[in-house]
Amino acid sequence: MPIYDFTCAEHGLFTERMSYEASLAGTPCPHCGAPAGVLPALPLVSTLSSGLRRAERRAEASSAEPRLVKRGHLPSCGCNLCQKKAPPTSRRWMLGQC
Image 1 (cartoon, rainbow, N blue to C red):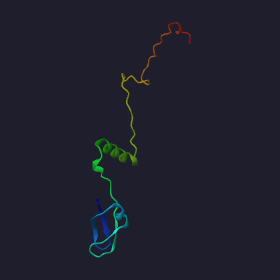
Image 2: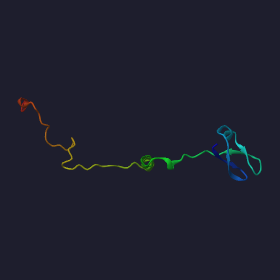
Image 3: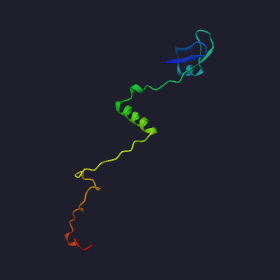
Image 4: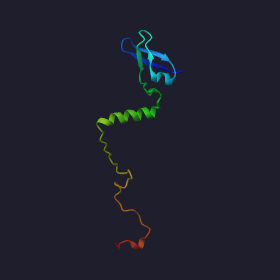
């Protein structure tokens, strides 16, 4: 049986073992008998893989202020933007016909 946390307005936090259906209805406080509601459970973030934790941290950090990323091209990077020469052609008879 799972353990649920409940809160009493007068006595504060206490825990009980019970089924899920019983926890939704609440339980009386063990000290005063007043009805106490179940507290929402928080997810276990520590069980996430390191890759998911890094992605979550990166998403949270960039949610308020997106980071501007500039890429510097090297002379030998090989991308289409940096290539200065025309691509080689196999139709040598077309050279000079344009």
